[in-house]
Image (cartoon, rainbow, N blue to C red):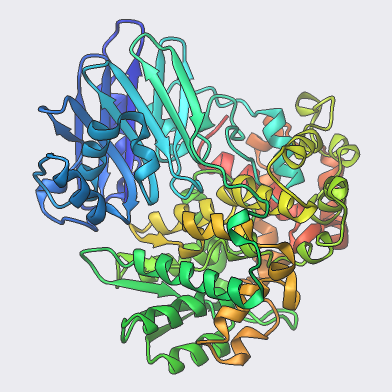
Length: 594
């Protein structure tokens, strides 16, 4: 796990090595164990290293194989690298390290652009084919590892974080009105390729982009499972699906143990993280390091779920640590979390992840986490009614459950310079849900959740907050084989038992019933959910700052309405409209974006 950066020039000028160095330095927290740079006339690469696999200097990056004519920077982990290494050795290749980085290089030498189809894991890759004079960029199937791009005439820069690109300089930092529309519609999610800034884009998940030395480029999506029933599964009943999903999840958990350092678990006490602990124990991992976080209760709302995490820790004899924080700690934590955000993220649990990661990183470098299970296995409340909605009713049902604001309200929210004449968020939703390859309304929504929304909310949240402390987080529920299997699973098995039915059946083999049948929980941070107390003061400060007035993102009357009436600030799925607005301005100001 690392931070990568690079610059390619297409106008005959040499790459700006100082800009690449600045971008790399901005990602020091992602790779505190080492750094490196490399250039080759038209292109330069930078790298910050977090040592997880092959702790020796042989695994350092940028990695160059002169005999193969290849150079590489890579962020992530290839879980099947031992098997690929054996296959490539049998094909006649040689290795100088035991790292997964070198396996990627040799895989490209063997299979060319099809190398990405052989990788199982999470990754963002910048590979230079020196003989063909081309740059190959690739992102993993579920977008677990980020890759940001800034293009200007004659130049392309890339980096693991958006703030790193800003540190490189010469970026158009104007607000993208379409991205702003998405942000204010979908719980602060801006799906790839857009970001809230006009001058920065994201390589979408499961995408390979090839850029030649003259600047010409092409792009292809290399993976997209069908959300439809497959002939191979004909005749399978609920017990058969339980066995299939259980087997795939066990494989996913074992895959994510590959490391030359200990692996812990972020244990919230919910079904998903508890199931990971149980399956790791079943696989022979004893005395696991597990970690939970909680806050003070507020207004009658509990601020922790320690009762459930303690139950699981006792059941599997883990080395468990509770981390409790007072609300007095919250505002400094919010400021620190905003500084670590690669993009503005309005989820109230982002701060909890930042604080949790800080504590966990002091004890382990790698941890598994339960992110993704709700999107993959239909765990959210709006998934259940969608199971009975006709295929052509998916748009209306999803919009009613998920949108924070409709287009009519948005026109009253944003300043005159940021208004979109058409309902661009609804238009994107229609296009996504109408695309072929999804059999039912729920299939279409789960595809949208998993492949468009999830990479830019929980996945991005976990990556940003954990890597701010040099902690690598692995997500078994986003294993590519498990996701493809779940996509083919009939919706009725997923929405059963109030959601995640097939997963709950797997859990009943190994977990106490109290954990499985409990009410659904989240990282509870009451002060953020309600945007009150010192958090409210922080929001007001950000929205009334001179930079905010100069930018004019939001209509003053709308902001005042939210400040006057807390009930008006409540949005879909428990999000808070006031926090959403304040968070965006706070992020822009924190990163000195004008």
